[in-house]
Amino acid sequence: MYESARSALKAGIIVGCFFITGFPEDDYRSVLKAYGAIIKCAWVGFNAYSPQLNTESYKELQKTGVITEFDEPVYVSGFWS
Image (cartoon, rainbow, N blue to C red; front, top):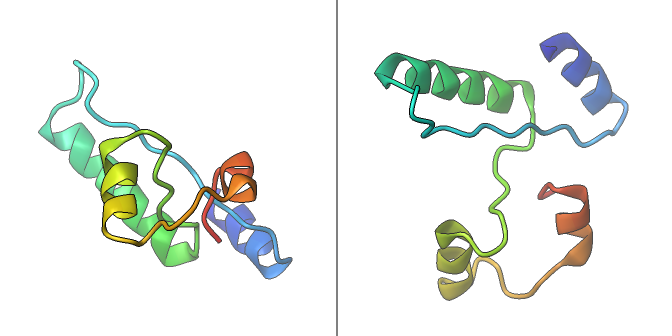
């Protein structure tokens, strides 16, 4: 997966992925494993963060001025570039 991502990035393609944690079956180890994968993805060059509409994170970024307006192409693509 990581080599494919590197090739896509070299070709100018935005690469990203989504991780969801907090399922009832998650435990300390599974969350740490997910964080390790997130760090590796960021190291490779994956798009590192995409706050989803109407989440606390999105609202906080709006409140602090990081997100100043709704940018439809960003949310249609699902990634910040």
